[in-house]
Amino acid sequence: MPPLLHKLLTGIAGVGVLATAACAGRSGPQPAPPLATLEPYNGEWVLDAANRSTAGLQFASTDGHGISSETMEKIGGILMMRAEQLALEVNDTVFRLSGDEPAFSLSLPMDGTPVEVQAEDGDGASSMTLSWSEGMPVVRQTLPGIGWVSDRYEVTADGGLVITRRASVRNVRGAEVEGSRPVELVYVRSSAVSPTIGPARGVSTVADS
Image (cartoon, rainbow, N blue to C red):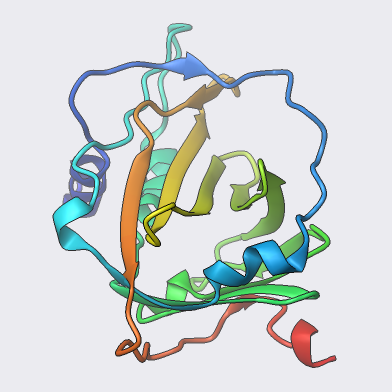
């Protein structure tokens, strides 16, 4: 097994394998909540290492068809991506995230318009969209023919920020297999954080247009 693939698979491994086919029926898109209710998202955050998730996503196909190493490598690269420090900005036109990990930065229209993102290595493009789940923003990155990774952002009652990460991949037959045990990244607010902001994926000029 190539060292890079071994590292990726180790990084997303968890305890107990559970495979589920992605739900075929999903509810329709939800509208964005009033901007005032999103104000708590704005600000700077730092990863709370003591509360980061120890579980990992695992994928297992139940129809007798495996998942290719290329698929796992591409999805694994996204799953392992995280920022130690980040800043969030939510206004009436854009949802913007800036992190000390440049690839973690993004900027998406609040109306849910999909944005195409070219891979840094030039190998294909993915799309990113912003949607809403019970008033919480969800960023979903889709790699055509490979799978998707979604991050749901929730400001908790105690003032923390929890990013819940889910993912799904396509097996060699094309069936969708969703990973088990979503990963949670917990952040705490910090006025001392000043992330080194990398180029944002998406439409970074929306807020200024």
